[in-house]
Image (cartoon, rainbow, N blue to C red; front, side):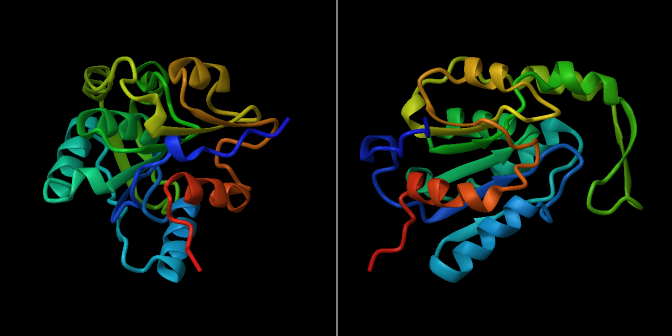
Length: 210
């Protein structure tokens, strides 16, 4: 049975004027999902302020960059979206600021999962670029665990059973009570992202009005 569309009570009361997108591990602002959403905003909601920063490998530095960047934003009129590791980061931001969040196959325990990736890594979109994922970054990820979700109605979770990297069951268990869009198939990258974009737009109350 297809998931129910979000009710009005599950959406922000007013459309956000500022959107923050946080990419995943080894990814960048060139993320397909980020670019598709940004293109939709430019076409339909050009007044929305968009920011998808290149996140440094250090989780502590990444969140310091984000918090500095949104310090002047109206927190009651912003939303955050995140994919994979970016979903973990988005949860931390949303719990601190009380803003709505859209999570796309979010990492639940990246400290556990990324411990195997300590060492030199290549950037996904620019393989010629390399960075070093340090052992201390695992501790930084542990320090960013957000704890129980305080306002589940502010969250939309898009989880794919076909995710070949992360376990969808952990995602569902981590976010009880949130608006859930569970895909029977799919993949970690959400290659069919365009199919789910209308749901995300609707959840954020960004649907253009005639």
